[in-house]
Image 1 (tube, protein in one colour):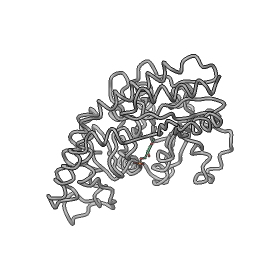
Image 2 (cartoon, rainbow, N blue to C red):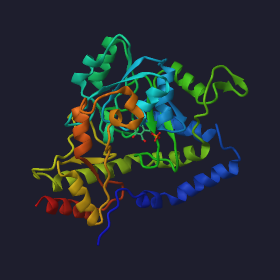
Image 3 (tube, helix red, strand yellow):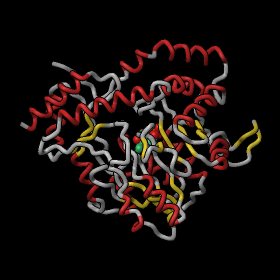
Length: 368
Ligand SMILES: Cc1ncc(COP(=O)(O)O)c(C=O)c1O
């Protein structure tokens, strides 16, 4: 039986084996493993790619979001608007600072924060909005920035899943005041371990974050604030420098695979395909379809050697970690609906057309 994994690094990593090995040797032989030139060069390259003045490499995406929120001054009991459908990391970053999470439902078509529902959730205690560019598609950033400006709020984008996506031609991760991204291996730009970054156009926030991530220190053994050890290391930065060169090509491959799925799967009545907002570009971190028969479809595809995943089976407000918020089940029906109907299909750079067609054929035969 043909096997199609949900995700494979094989094509990507085989094609850059030589360069990645050289990157390893360069770091190994430099005898310099933390706070060095690889981090500085990667930060410069990623800032340029992301159309921001500054990029600060950090330990992972969750720490990036936490540091962004801390740098803008989020404190205990401040209210932060977070989409009700997201990976839990977005909410955790706010929780670390004792902030109060105010969930807002996503739009059922784009799966991203519903801009028409944001203003109703704003109170005198609201300090920030955290739009999450989920699955690879930008949120409606123009409208979100307008609301933030009008209400005097900060915006911290969660760009973990959308490196390279745009809204009105402007990159995600370049709109907000300080924005977090993740280079977890499976992300569109993935390290060979944990890594992340904050992107910002503010010199002040950039400096604060660079200090906070490094024990609150700009000068060795002089600590100006109670900081953290949330640094990106030289080895991951060296690997990321190599992979950044190929991100655009790999993104185009993702988009090509998505277009093939969209074409192959159109017209199936019981299957809802992902939609892209006309002003957004989609970098297809995930290809997420929806159907009432999700569990049966997943089982059927599994029986035919096809890997799938659910992103995410339980919305953050229903997680045990957030039971203390006492939010009743059913409070966020769109998030619940998404959690019970969504299925992510295999999609990765190097996935062959015959694999896309095999997955599509099996989906068509399931619904027949
Ligand atoms: C939407 C979102 N936000 C934040 C994160 C956190 O990133 P990391 O795993 O690097 O901490 C992830 C990924 O895991 C994510 O998908």
